[in-house]
Length: 355
Image 1: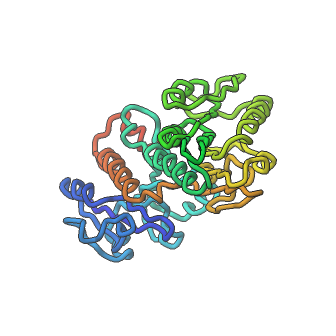
Image 2: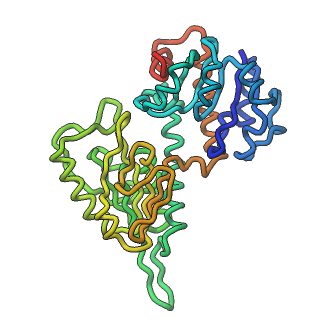
Image 3: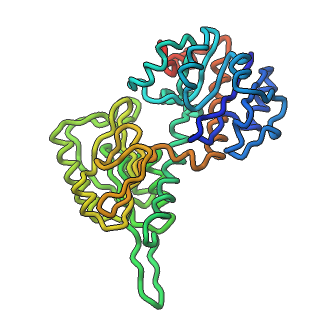
């Protein structure tokens, strides 16, 4: 079986297979075709890959039955694929109209690791969590580099500098990493999440949990947040915005799987924040938690910087590529297996975009 590694779009420096993992896969008898320069922006030169055919993009498509990429190829390339081809990557929200339209004329099988189910077997294939952790870390580093103030408290002969106040919205993988990073940098961290069950995790990292008790169950059976009643949403909105007005940095990570992200920060609140403050909205790709967020843009609103870069794993391309490669390796072991267990079969079925 032949596996193709595609070069990502210009704005994505990551690569789906790093040299060390490509070597392991080739030892299982697979032929690997690498698009020329696919790993260069992640610091992996073509010469770093052993036992790999380095060739043009057209040749990768021509020779590969399985194609690996973070993002979908363009519509023309999708149309060129046959039922004998399989695309494996991170292709986004299954409710996306643009995604479904792109796949309409694609005959290939399409597997998206965004949809990995939560189970002990699938844990080592949880691409979303691995990349979200990087994004949470980078969000805080980005905010710290942009606010005109220190993160930690400093006592000097010229006076004492108060520590920065950080509000993290959402205590999933990205949120928890953001809390840990902000605390390591010396900030005071407050955290909001609709799930009371995450309070202990937040406090174990040194964060102060903002508690708004829900009226009904807030988690589905996989642990993801569910939509709540309007009365609860109004109550949480008021509470969150009261805290938001007093902080220097807001890290937005709150999302509902398969739906638009909840709006938690209003324009009025942003206008009341201290000039120079920073909002990093990691939920920008699904609508954003802040009312003034624009996807993939940096907006200046009443002196506050709102950063709508939803996938900051791009900024850590080398580590993101390495983690993604390890995950794809585990997934490929199951995907190419002839006699899969019931649990393994469930993983394959649930990650399919074309049922």
